[in-house]
Length: 255
Length: 198
Image (cartoon, rainbow over all chains, first blue to last red; front, side):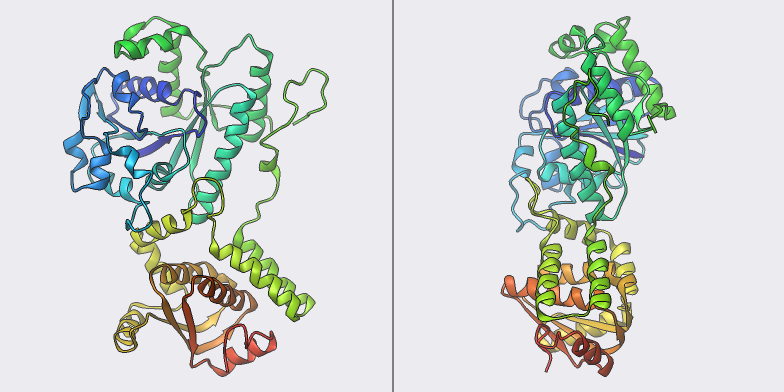
């Protein structure tokens, strides 16, 4: 089982869109995938068509004795979901009197999802305790990136965070980037990509997810892009991205 | 990243720092230790280095929202039994010693860390973790230095930093029964007062 945190502290870079569609595309290849919503906004469930309010989620597994297996919701073939849960926001405010507050997620997952090929964590756009839990639970990080200057600035901040975790926890993360919401008609998009190739050689997944209105439409129908418009270029992008991820296909750098 | 190209649309490169060499806490410890060995040691330098080490110990934590990363790292370390055991062995604290430590703690009522053998910068990571975990969960720590056969400047700096961090948190560190070699090194570096050794 590989645990992969999909993370970027900047909002609007396509974290949930990437999680929803990439996880479905990977599950379609036959891999067993569990996706956990670590964002208190709880939009992952909605995106998969799970509209039950106040359903117990990962917060319960982290804060109580509830086994994460009891929280699994089958959402597609080979794909199961753990929603955020109404108490997830509370975890950000746990004080240091709560022992082991950094390993709540890791302990919740440990030994309970071993039959899965992948566990993906859809992380919130913040840098608090939820992110710390995700960073401790995972060895792999997937960073969705948009092709604009502020995303670069956000990535710089995120890499500072990653390096601090690596130093503190004495581990090195496997790190991959995925270009999302890419507007090929804008010159700055090319320049941002070139910049990233310089700093992350061999770490950017080969397929670039192009900006498309259709990707903004499907969540309201509770469908992934593979269901909403399976012949669209966005559906093809995500299917190809899934193969990139599984086979390690990346863009070579500017070294 | 070329920032002066005529058609460049990125005026400032926020990722430029990633090309700079890492300055990790331990490198700082090593550099500071080298500075002591090569440039001598007076009171002013001692204070500056103590302050530097104090910053290192106090954390990893003084950045943005993750103000408690140091504590969280403790959680992680506590959860990683094997890693902790490895760290303990690295600094010469075996299972057997741990049992003895528990017994000593039962008698004295305060946690007990046994230092032994040759303590050098190679062991400092494990020692740092042990000190940090102990300091976070106790108000008073007794460090037995009777079995220390040698100690280098980096390890002494770590002890000074631990002492300063403890003072700041109004906690107490006692170094008991220091060996002759330990005292010799402490005296050489003028740290008798800083480590409160008679």
